[in-house]
Image (cartoon, rainbow, N blue to C red):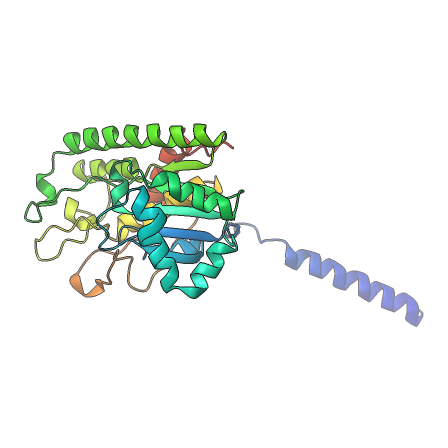
Length: 300
């Protein structure tokens, strides 16, 4: 056999070996979930959304405006008040905003429990900078103002009715804004509905690892805290992923060194982390809730 013939045979053998190596072995694990596309997010919110790990689901914040200690969220406060003040305090954020360097506007503050007049000027401000952006409202889960009332004492049916009433008002407001703009620009992420499904599962003893309602909130030493705990934070992010990317979150998995303890790190308070079984359930709740909700419009 001449040298050229030998080289050809060796090359063929190496190519075959490479092809075999590239194929997954029989019975091997499924390939990892494809990373989500990256959409830059202008985030207006408070402790009910700002600390959440949206960057892990392809939604890095171009900049964040906090609404803590804001009393009014009406049109005047938005146009000439707290949004403008926040931008003026953040030169880099203001530059990003004025240049329209964002794809998504995410509104995640607790005042969205009821419609606010400020939604109109927020939409107008965003579209003036980026006419192609989409605006998403995180409908917040129901809460009570009495801090000494345990979560176990909540009337879930009454809270569901309150959530339904608030969501209908928000839907009417969003419909009016979209009608004024002549196209669908603003969407709603039904986080409240997803959280109520989680709470019903806990009440029925069907959510592993959570024995009481307060386990998924930031309650400490028996004191009520309606900020989302680990599971509610993860559920909210999965809902955002499903709505904005219009894709099922099943198969994703968030990671956090502090265990998603909401607006503060509470790993030393004994709160339960999110385990694999819970992640799977939360992803399923998120997709089933968002994909069937018309104002999220994931079919587009």
